[in-house]
Length: 124
Image (cartoon, rainbow, N blue to C red; front, side, top):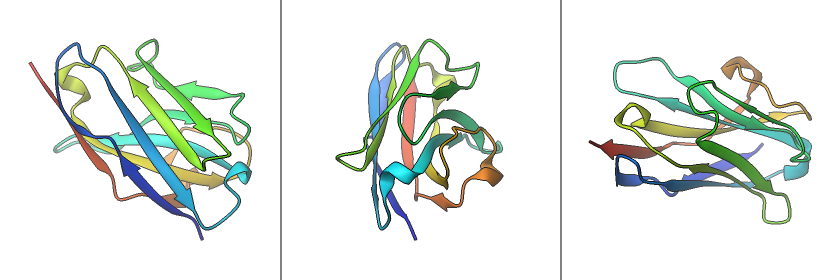
């Protein structure tokens, strides 16, 4: 069992930045690839970014490529997403997810563990 707790969400103006964190506990963190997903109001949850268990491989949704950076610190059992140049379209609840395995993947069904989410609101 893996427990995930996100933090770092909040209200930011368009063009601003936020860094989300996800603290993991329960199992060996370095055995899990990690992902970030988001769900905007009245929309389905969508993939944002993922990182391999080692941290050497990353994957991004086209909508955030060049603006968001995912990283992890296996010593601290934490995964991050640095979000820059935010727009109102980035407003959503952001979820951290973990999957047993090395590869960063983009499908929700590949992830077995989920956090409760953190709200990000970008004002225009």
